[in-house]
Structures are given as C-alpha cells and as structure tokens.
Image 1 (cartoon, rainbow, N blue to C red):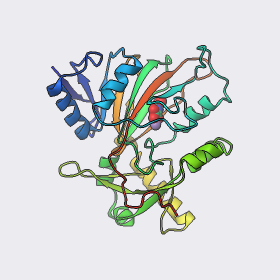
Image 2: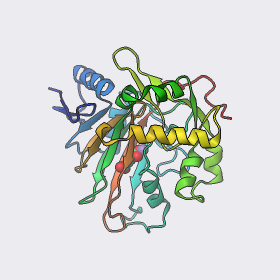
Image 3: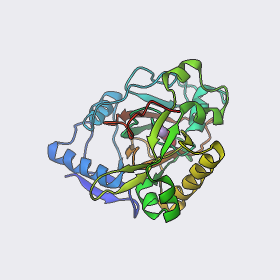
Image 4: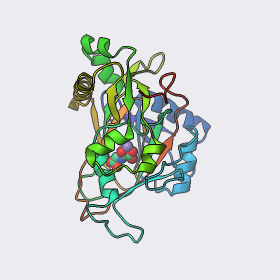
Length: 290
Ligand code: OGA
Ligand code: MN
C-alpha cells in the first residue's frame, strides 16, 4: 500500500510501501503521480535498482530526455554523476567530472537551457560518501507566493534568457566546448510558471538564467540575484541526506536544487539520473534568444 509522508511543511514527501523493481500497480502509480504534482519532491528509500529499472519507472511519468553532448552518458537516457573513472578509481581534482559536481553546487533547474526544459529528474544513489554530498531543494511555488509585491510586479510576463555557456563559464571559462555551445544555444524562458488550479505559480530561474529580456545587463542581473536570494532562503529549503539506494524524484518546474560539497578527492559518490522531458516550452518562440 503506497503511503505518502511529508518531509517539510511546504513541500517534499517520502513514499513508502512501493517496490520500484517490481513496479507499482496502476492505483499505486496514480497516488505517486498525484503526490508528485502536489509535493514536487518525492523520496523513495531502500530501492536497490539498476539502470533499466530506473528508466522503466521514469518512463511512466513521460518520455525521457536524451543526454546532451559533453555530459557523462551522452546519447543515452542516463546522466552519470560520479567522481569515479571506469575502473572505479577517484578522478583527479582537475577533471571534468569534478567541475560538473562543482557546477551542480549552484541552484539550478535541470535542462532550463533547452527550448523545452525538463519536467522532472530522478536521481538514484548508487554510492555515497560517509558525510556531505547532500542535495538541497528550494520550493519555488512557496517562494513565488511569498514574493514581495514589488518583485511580483517586476517579473510579471517577463522572460529570462537561459544559457548553458553562461552558467558553466562562471565555474571555469574553459569548461564549455564549441560542440556544447552549438548544441545548446541560449533560450527564452518565462520567469513565472503557472501550474494550474490548486497548484499556483512558481518562480522559474536558476544558474542558467543569464539575463532578463528587455533589461540592461546590470539591471537584469541585479533582479535575478535578488530573486534568487529571496527564493533560496532556508525556510524554503529541504535538504536530502542520502542513504545508499535512495531514489529522489523532483519537479524541475517547481523546485530548484543544488549539490553540496563532500570530500570528493577521498570518497566515492556515484549517482545516476534520468530526466523526464517537459511537454512544451514555457513561452512562445523559446529558441529565439536575443
Ligand atoms: C542532478 C544534480 C545534485 C547532486 O542530478 O541534476 O544536480 O547532489 N544533482 O548530485
Ligand atoms: Mn541538476
């Protein structure tokens, strides 16, 4: 029997009574789906699953994204976030894998740099460090609801330009390859998303948001920074402390998330992600970035 237990006053819940390897039945899945829409972050514990099981469960929520060039798992339905090389040894601190982990430490929504941004992500903990390496989630529906009127007015109907090259160049100017630049040019995204009756609206930003359309560089950046500072206050945040075999599903259109540091040169961390594609752009003319 699928049960849903809240993990935070605003969002996030744990799902128990389900074995993902066997797969929930239709009624069980309907409860999970409803909890996902309502709570935005769902935690499943003690799910010792393999890649195929993860893909199969993810696909019940919708079609999966294919991993972009330059990411570990490119061309497949998996994104591998790991500090291990194929032989299981820890990679050097200067390696791309370590940079990716650092980039993930900035609050972001997965694939917000794509014309149709991701709907949801599912991350499973295959190996975790003894301490650190938590993942944090910030509730963008609550953040929007509590936003001062002045800021709500400032973003009403506005569009932000999201740019993968921008977010990565802040980590390391050399990090983005020409191939990546070509594969993911800047896109336009609404700054406010509407989730329909009963679910309200959410603020949609994150690390890939480079500028605000129709505003000067400095003014737009200042607005993005102010909104991000407001939206990621502690009261909006749920911190997930991973146990091995946890699986977490989150709604990229309703929460931001970030990785936190761990002793990555000493301890192994190996996570596998599937990404459920969005069913449409957030604005008309998403690709036509200025
Ligand atoms: C991700 C991500 C954070 C982490 O999987 O999309 O940002 O803690 N992960 O690994
Ligand atoms: Mn992410």
